[in-house]
Length: 71
Image 1 (tube, one colour):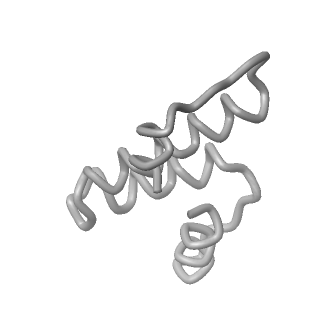
Image 2 (cartoon, rainbow, N blue to C red):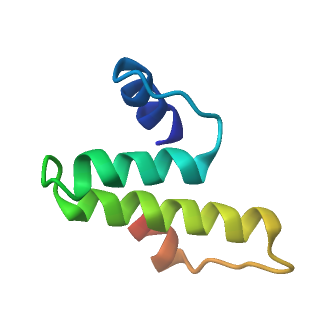
């Protein structure tokens, strides 16, 4: 998802290597104006939170149901 958003941002003239900046840019330019449904913004935000938690959390465990939902 990061690289998909990054490609979109670059096409629009926005450059960053930071996840949070990219997600903020996407929300400001596509979600808030209603160009893309809020559901997709939530999916991206949830994916970022799950990624951050699993990378930096002390112990993170996802249930089979959680993983199926993420996929």
